[in-house]
Image: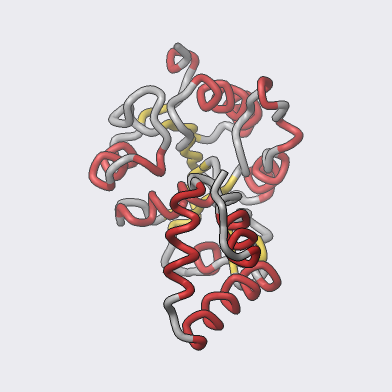
Length: 207
């Protein structure tokens, strides 16, 4: 345990170290960096975090983070509304968008089925996905772009069973993503090719 000369410094370090992937040494480095900044910089930093927490909303259609009820992707007339790409969380939307290879819409599940972590289908945005598919006749394909883990494959199979009655194409990203990898850590070229060379999902897809 570090010995801090200031309780204010200690409190700030403890708050930063609560962030995922931030240890106490990194937290201390960040806090000391902020202390060297001028008041305007600190105010902009703190205001951006407060405004994010107070004003950000989730898209009523796809559950992506947005500044208004309908996100920019869902509201854009340039997107292909016949294709929905299902992803685990918002980080995957950003990763796929950065490839520049996908021009359809998204649906953010908010996680994947993981009984070990107490996460079941009812905890995810699955019902709203089924509702979208059932009420939008323009949708012709659903891409399951989940991490290539056991939990991701379990979620794929569950979603396939829910979507299959609608008689639309269900595909999965090509296995250019190594088994066990998460999408947000894949390089843009590999991820882009995995989207382009997606394959139709059927029972043979289950390992």
